[in-house]
Amino acid sequence: MQKFVELGLSKPIISALQDAGYTEPTAIQDQAIALILAGNNILASAQTGSGKTAAFALPIIECLQEPGTKPRALVLVPTRELAVQVSTQFKLFAKNMGLRTVTLYGGVGMDQQLRALRGKVDIIVATPGRLNDCLERRAVDLGAVELLVLDEADRLMDLGFMPQVRRIVSKVNKDRQTLMFSATIDDKITRIANEFSEKPIIIKVHAERVDSIAIEQKFMHVTEFNKDALLLKLLGDFASEAVLVFTRTKRKAGWVSDRLQDASVVAEEIHGDLSQSQRERTLKKFRSGQVTVLVATDVAARGLDIPTISHVVNYDLPDTPEDYVHRIGRTGRAGKTGTAISFISEEQRHLVRDIEKVVGFQLETGGAPIRKAAPARRFRRSGRR
Figure (cartoon, rainbow, N blue to C red):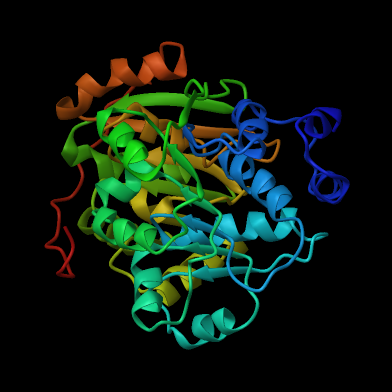
């Protein structure tokens, strides 16, 4: 714990870290915490799973110290699941400080969140849409916010949230400290950082190498027609606690889930077309073991932290190696080992080399002949893309 002490964190936070089992700071925490405590604006590149939430949560809690009456820290995130995860981390680290965190996200009724805002609030973790709704109702005052965080800023941009983010930022104290975290730093992210902050210090933590000991990785060459048959064969071979299957689209997630259910696999889907209450019920069943296979899109799976996931299957490869690292990092957690298997169709072979550069080694490939799957049925539901 001495390293955390050297970074400038006080005893109540150190005690909370000890209780949570933290011993040494990660690379992003080591670089960011002292800079934030010194009052710098920062733009940091860090992957999900690198400890980035603690990298900004710990110094924010240290800066706030004691409870106040108005929100003094605001964290904007792209998804509901990430909002819940980030809030949980704040509450964990601040448990000895008396600071109050309120979480705002859409897909659920506003009444409970509005009631929470009427009390004393120190930290708000919010998705842009719901926070804008609260601003329109004059339910929240951001004028006292001293610390602003844009978490997963690249996702905020990709999902079209920037107009809402700009409106929110216009309501925040102009003398604030701004912290931006993104999986990658490109020209677009740099322009946004310069728009929202003055002279941000850039921190680049190299993409986390996937632990080849904790996570066994395999690529399997398939055709689109063979994917369903191969997935069913693999699920039959797994002696697993929980399996997470990634697809590229909401429509595909529903289709794969339907096919698995038809084959008597206890599977459910999770994606952005489901209501928040539906997503929470599905995740609860997955965590408890009532559901053994969860079929998910990237956006829906952001922030998932379920230690029992033993296998990740990339039914479709993601478009970027960073997303690959994020996906397979859902297994091999909390000291356990895991397995990640990726299906590679002819159309996605070009993505393999970039992924191997990020993971740092050549991945094992295979693909024993699989009997052609039965002809695909028509999609049973509409509205997915």
